[in-house]
Image: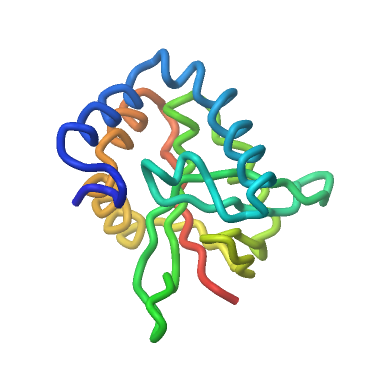
Length: 168
């Protein structure tokens, strides 16, 4: 199942590039900054990385500071409501295959009530860290959706955190 917007050989090329160590070194500094800038300038209507994978901008309170932290993230939408809108989303704390958990995952653990910007709309959500069989099932679906997550997991000793966020 290819992510929306990425087709054929294009998806394989993007997956191959995103699995490299070089991408993991550069992307965390470039991709979120570009996403935040374009998202702000377009008043929440455009997220550049969402051209490759569906994406949200997560606003969660900082674990220690309590201040709002905005983080552009790839996501996997799950289910649909009566109007065709996503009912929940999976967020993956892959950190591009880097050794540490990304800060946003600690923020959600401390403050699970958050907000996402999804397709230009602000949506209040509650996050839950998945574990056990529920995480295993979600992880299998995520690997089908975006195989580079397997490369990221193989690169690190930590278990990559997977959250399900649902509308409040």
